[in-house]
Length: 208
Image 1 (cartoon, one colour):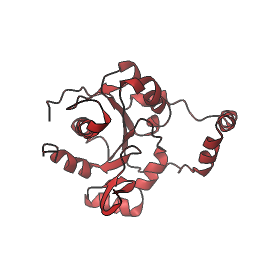
Image 2: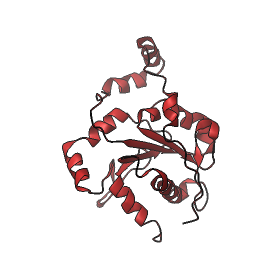
Image 3: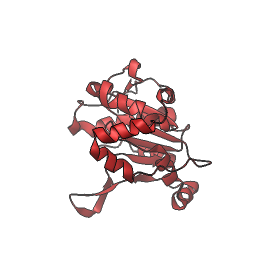
């Protein structure tokens, strides 16, 4: 990998952007404006906060054209509800709280692995000791952080995490329909615990 050259940013800065819950009138207005959002909202139940919840770092990856749109929307809605949050991009934008993380090759979809590899290295270098779980997603994703924490506190996950097992959690997909080749889809996000992050980091200098 190339020399690491990206500054550490405050993982709590976006929490200051949290404006609080919408009023009933505002919710009703959104439902009238976008009917299919109303159908989606009716299906969502937010888990109540729990004691001793794991510390969750949420990360989105983006690029410069989306700083003032997708990235800003995430920073003003769901990202502050995580324990910590980062917005990683191809360029730094201090006004939006975004850090540029350099990677090998071009900034394009066909080079997404190099972008992903550099982003995870950044997370590992600076934040691995501060959080228990690390969730990464595209800039057009919405995560209900309280539901994520509730999922991470399911007994089978708590037991595996306590044993020190590496956990790679997400929406499993079949590569080209092959049930023997499973992967967690990237755009909607996936989650590592610290043991899995360390395992990934140790493989970064292997050829890809």
